[in-house]
Image (cartoon, rainbow, N blue to C red; front, top):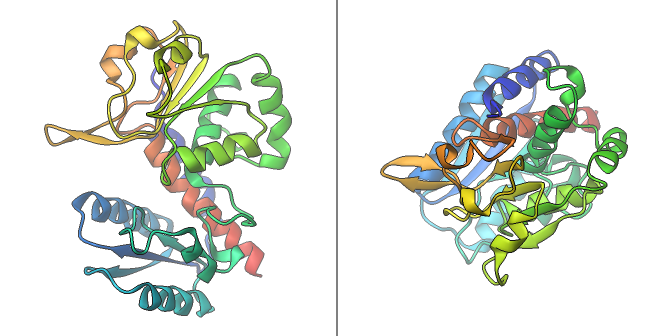
Length: 282
């Protein structure tokens, strides 16, 4: 069964919109990648629908670390700024976890910092899909993740399930793994160095792919498995995930398509975190 991520995101969006009051998201982008500017555009469009002030700071050329950090620190110090995001990936000379030290904990809504009060939106999106599949399979306010409340649910549901996470990148596997750990969901992490990864997949009840290239085929799936894609790749000018939807849909019990699966839910949780940040700052 295909999971319609857009319908889930639209429902959560309706709940969030009622709570929006004069909040601002500042987004930093370095470079001119068409994919990255496209992702920023989607976030900007979502902000407009929600009635959120969206400020875009674009460095077309790579700045020095010092000037980039100064710009982030300056934006963070503005009392009108509710939250800050840095569009990843960054150029190598800027790509360090320390860049997030210039954002206060209560404004770092992507969940990169160790002591952040926020979980990564992509991880929250996956937990929401889990609640939909293993819960009542309907749209309701209960779908929105409250990790302190929901840990018991996840612990019960995943007690005897084998979960595999493929990938460990900064925009996919790393934040997903962090969220699974916070939810007390045990998982096996696979990457390009793992010997015979297909053997782990064939035994898995749940597979999460976060690579950006085709890494999963129907032959490597256990019948009835839940398959969730995070990775993105381009093929003939179109975005695809880490598996072909048509290829795996007859084997998987549930799966997220690409596009229209996890992506829309990921974006809306960014704004859910932003609304929560506004509450914290009061």
